[in-house]
Length: 82
Image 1 (tube, one colour):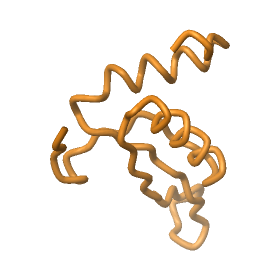
Image 2 (tube, rainbow, N blue to C red):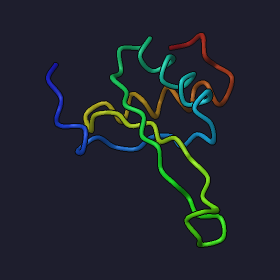
Image 3 (tube, one colour):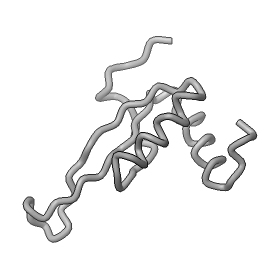
C-alpha cells in the first residue's frame, strides 16, 4: 500500500516521552499500521526556553480508523483481541 507524504499523515496519539511513543509505535506497527514520530515543543510558560518535548504519533490518513481502534482497545485492557 502506497501512502501519502508524511506531511499528510494524521496525529493519533501524543506521548509525554519518546519511550511511550516507541511503545505505541511498536504496537501499531505489529498490526501493520505504518507510523512516524514527530517531536513538538510545548511552551509551559509561553517562553521557548521553558519548552517541553512531546512526541506525536502519526499514521497515514487511511489508517486512522484502525489505529484509533487499536489504541482504544489497548487503553481499555483488551489488547489480546486485535
